[in-house]
Length: 353
Image (cartoon, rainbow, N blue to C red):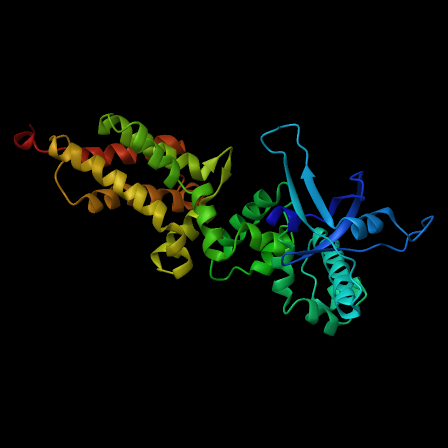
């Protein structure tokens, strides 16, 4: 039903009393399980249309919506079979016409981006605000009914803008309306892709933080010795925030402060990824502590002592370059910090196995 409701145009198939098929394109509105279409006012040879005669003779009909893609794994079609009738009761007919007008014009307005008000939506559809509210209890109910497919590239644009806004001002100060405007998408598209700040922040964490790539390293290379794997983890963290000459330290700062402040949206968004990477790290270092390769200590403290200097370096690197004259390759710097951690974690000779 979702793909059917997302569509504006369909093909209506009817048949006459002798079973001869007849197919025409229609513009329609879906209201629950009822699909309305209108006979428009364009000039026709007759108002005694074949589709209406067929429905009178044989009310069994089918409606088809589809989308073709050269990649056949992405193409789809939906067919709805039902019983048709010609609406003659004036109140229902008026409601159907209002639905068609509001839904059609709302799609057009939202496709242009921005966040049209109820007054603007009603004016575009040529109905009063009272009529709008009879058709849809709220503006959000209209957006839910439209359930529009996001335009190509919308998710990437939203995340790119959110990265800058959250990095500069934090998650709490983020306005979803401002985000939609700056990303040039409608609020319907924004909330379809990211239902709230928690969902948005979760995507930022997975897309731009080192949690996922570090988890992947710990899962795929856990058999490697600490003196090999730990420096590689440090370099992976560095590459996450300094890639292609672009600094993403703003999102690092935002992730750190949002999560450390225990803001509900941030904690909800990051908790799964954090549990995964902390759990994988804890298992890895505990195995090597038990094997005598690393000095025994609480694994969370081991993680903090490893991450802390690297995070501090990343957060202050620009300052150190501009004011303190630091001239060192970034990957080399974090590798040295990881090696310092390894030296500190090396067991004393008498405690080695």
